[in-house]
Amino acid sequence: MAERYFSVAEAEALIPQLTGVMKRVMAANAEASQTRERLQAEQQRIALAGGGVIDQRAWRAGLERIERLTAEVQQGLGAIVELGGAPKDLSLGLVDFLHLRDGREVNLCWKYGERAIRHWHGLDEGYAGRKPL
Image (cartoon, rainbow, N blue to C red):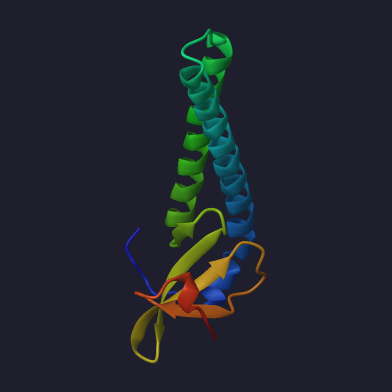
């Protein structure tokens, strides 16, 4: 989708869709991270023990789960991009929308759970630089 400028109202109109998509993306991302950490911990445990037997079926199931969850995350991020948003942080659920403010390009900043667009930041500032509209 070509870049465009969003008004506050246009970005807010997308919040119901964004909320559903971001909820799924955040959950899949968190679960994939937990599964990855569990597999890494098991790998480290075996290495520290000087070797050992691994449950190959469980290991494969974990890897397949990570692949499915990663695909779900990618699909959700693609849906957000199709809407015109720019996903920024999956742990916080951040999405930015390009906006013109006083003739300057900035981002309208939405965070998962917010019911309205209430913040903006410069293109080089990010979430830490959020300012109220």
